[in-house]
Length: 437
Ligand code: 0X9
Ligand code: ZN
Image (cartoon, rainbow, N blue to C red; front, side, top):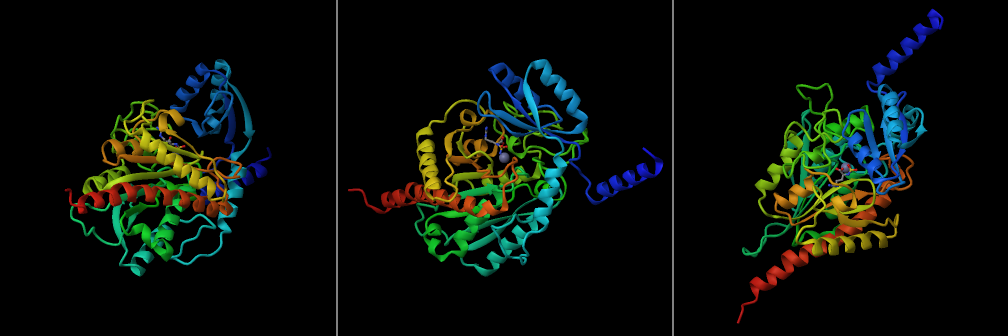
């Protein structure tokens, strides 16, 4: 290359790096297919290594896994795949081109005022907080803001409570439904699902009955640092953004960081891996905040829901191993009812599969949903893997499909509410107010 041309290229690449610290330039998207159990096991082991970012895991043999690989690892990965005999193909030669288009769409989102909510485009974390603050100011009789915690980078994590007030029956406290979203940064469809529940409860008077006998505690963004980082830099970032003393790689998988069978299965001890469980359980301020909240509100949570994406799955414990809990009957029955309601909402007509986390997806220990049931005291606990809709690439949900997805999800939430109200309020108040003869 002539000197002048190389200087121009160098300046251009410096400019790209200056305007945007991270680039997917040269990253490739692979589809890797395991055709037997041994190949599948190899793949699961590869997942715990640095350098591979699994975007989609195959549920069954023969189905493609989608994996994004940085330029410096591509040769080595291809060599390993060939030596094992794993079939792969490159489906995107340069991921940066996809991401440029994504960034363009995001930058063209319609204007919204601070304090507003929208389900027509994705929001920034500070906009979510501003919305919660506006609601708390406008509806002080039914809402209360709580400082849930401070993220590693110092962001304010806000939780909103929706309640009509304390129980008038001293023998029966109101049950709480706890909902979080966004523990995985790149799963952008998750926070809007939580925000829509808040919006429906607080701003739609037709739903006032839903917080008469049941209290709600909702945190729409459990990993604000990671979320911001996906908007500014690396769209497919999953973990928190904490800094480790002995590694240049940052972040822990929040959903491997809880102290219940920590590191037992499906988690990595390699800091650069996507499923890095952290140097120890509860190493992250964001997961500690959740733990502390549960302990402070001792025993009140009867249903724990955590929104993720994607895959149309309603998963209940256990996730750390392929075993079912004693109350599997309730968990499966309620999950099926919810799945039916989501389908019948007639928005995207998503068909959800209902199973334990380990049997329906894969074994993974240290998740919030296992912890919420085993230690946090919430017998009912679900991980909800929201749909990808008609998006072509993993996690890159279309802005135009936010609304139908959150609407159909809301139909499922109404069913969850009815079950909790009946079991932990109606039935209990009848027993405590009817004198036994
Ligand atoms: O791996 C996870 O943390 C969740 N899937 S995601 O694609 N959103 O990352 C699934 C958690 C469900 N629990 C288990 N499979 N144990
Ligand atoms: Zn997730």
